[in-house]
Image (cartoon, rainbow, N blue to C red):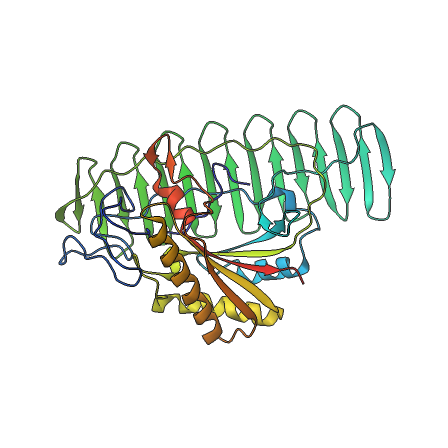
Length: 389
């Protein structure tokens, strides 16, 4: 469940079309899905996947799908998550489907049974329902407390959730710590990746040598140990000492609130969704897999082979910049490229490729009529759905 809109944290690569806004609101020249746009200053260094003077926005971040924190997730899902947790740019989550079998996103964070008071003891654990909206369950080592006012706790010995019922809360597991303060601000730490959102349009992102600062007034900075960019918010930026034109940075969108606990029925996983951010796979406005993405796809291919999957669906997604037909073609080309790369890396499963263009966003491309670079970043992705076995 997203803190703002469902999202991730990898650096984006913008989709392109005729005279459309760039990753930070600029413009770019029409291209085809397999041809890169020409940089404005050919002699000035640029961040891979970006025009000169542009750099990735401070990312949004998400809460995990809290409805699937029970034992309903398949063993395959858990196994894949553990093997890919340290692969940069790859996110793995349980998937669940609607009545038609189509993959959908769930909502919620706790389980309650019945609407009256009573106690139950069974082979899996115990349930207490106090009849006032509150209750506790302990099933298979998972302990849930719901205090009836939207607040509660969850613990399974590995994952811990605290929900204070006022829009704030925290989530921690061995690889992720998220805090949401309910006023639009929050933090996320996942390994070396740290994000701070101050709720006032400003924020920071760090990952090893990469550091991004957005001061909320159009200005900010980027450095990765190779290139240094300062955006002054007045239409100019300094790239390694050279002054260039650059559009002011869009503000970092405020985070939403920690969702209150409600009574939910158990949700069973129908499989696994593996999300690859396009910034890891592709250069700006191109559909060929970058050479340095080979390690990511090799690790993924090895995991899929070890799991012995029989089939998977690879889908390409874009943001909403540019014509629908352009984005559709680019999404199809990128899905085809990932399928080809996985097959070359040894995956023998039946892999189907599909392009969905901009039709299934997981975040807002615009907020209040303003461009939302961080949201568009989350929409540019390739997803691999592996049905439960």
